Length: 132
Length: 347
Image (tube, rainbow over the protein chains, first blue to last red):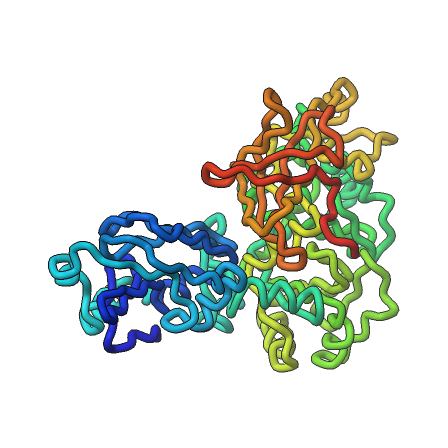
């Protein structure tokens, strides 16, 4: 069973967002990492890059596939987690903690945050997927 | 389709569809399973591979004609790697042929070519009037591969069978099990064929001794590190053995299907490896640029868990030699790499 912590929001593409003091931290969910298998390469966005709501922000590779990570909010990248470039496996081991990917300064937080899923809604989404 | 071992791992593996088979792709992690095989031991369900028992008075004539190698030269209890070619010299399949008795052989071939091999083997038998019996025991039998440096000791521990005195590419009967010193990972190990229930018990016994259950994901990364080509991925009927540098597996002192075509063929391309300078995952279909006008595409690739670098196989013009510097395009970015003659790792 995938972990779905409280206190953060989720996208339909299996990203999570933590909003703290106007800065949003983004990563992929436990469900996403378990489906990908070993994360072996993470291609992070550049600091200063402008990301758009639910457009590809960066990519994550496992042995089997390359997957886009979508930005759950529009905004500008203010920090990236260089630790995951050096040790991509941390995304598998600690997807909601040390495996975070990037932080952004949101542009349209108030309207876009309404489009994200609460933990209970995300739980229902993945339970509805045949292989959850 | 599911193999007879499916119930053992139904609720603990991640699955993929592999040519119609619902097979484990990994249990815990491809990297962990890969390293377990390189350092200790791992066990794979390979029951999806096609096993054809071939018997009859003229079985050796038949197999010598069907195969590039010379099965008739095998002593009882020995096995050989071989190719099956079409009339044009194209590779229909590769596989391992086991001599079980004077007039009975087991031929293990790939899952992806099951239908093609069934009809081809029957056609060749009928056309030549060889009067051989071809038997595929399907789900009544299972097959596993135990691979890794500690394979023989853990096998002895789990089953009592000591394979240490059995040479590589030899097999023995152990109860109803056929056990051979063989595999496709580059490591020490055995492959075990037998009635489903017997194989299932060995599989569970090995897991009970701490052997890592492994899926097709690590089977692929392991064979790629060794540069072993994979049927239907790296080669098919449009590929001839010369292009794979596989002449040593052909015996030109006898007649076999495809031989005449091969005598008039010269390879224009050769299967070689590429090794990237950086940590990047290579995949089949990626373009390799050897020089501004010379490009090729990888047939398969991965990230080598041992080297931490991208590795791949592809067909290169014969003029591109090992050591050549090339670049591989990975989603719009170019990565420097070197053409190498596999294996990528020393064993």
